[in-house]
Image 1: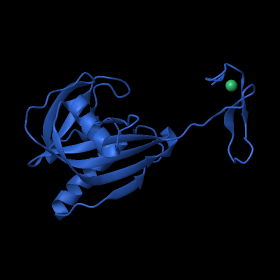
Image 2 (image 1 turned 90 degrees about the horizontal axis):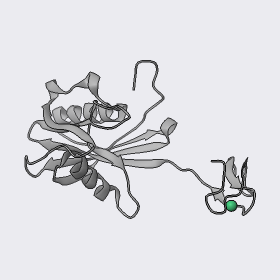
Image 3 (image 1 turned 45 degrees about the vertical axis):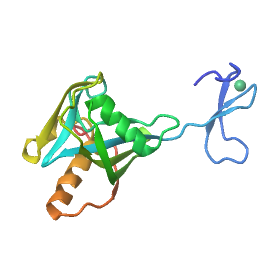
Length: 182
Ligand SMILES: [Zn+2]
């Protein structure tokens, strides 16, 4: 950021009084522009032994498969955001279950939150941000073609819990990718 969004004054990088981190501060009006992590919310939509995935029609990871998920909007809860994204990306109506994963991704300034969900019917259809939406059994999951490691981690944990016969709440920290990983 070069100019203040409030007054157009020049931005200075400095530690505001009483703070401990360097921030973008306006040299004219003194406004401090805080930047904080953004929550991404989504679901694991399940129909019997199958999970619904969407193939992305947008960058990043165009053409790769993902669970329906996206950035929270102002004024909604995490649960509402997860249901909204599921409807928008997969055209799918779900009965939302409990929280399943909360994955910190500090290097991209995000937290990814996934809820268990049951499809209410099979009338799903890809939304504007998806090329395709379809159900996968575990052996069919395109592990090498998944868009994000948070999705791969969530699916691995889902199938592990499914085999174990009990679903927990899982937290992980996703570290920066080494070469070849996402
Ligand atoms: Zn200003």
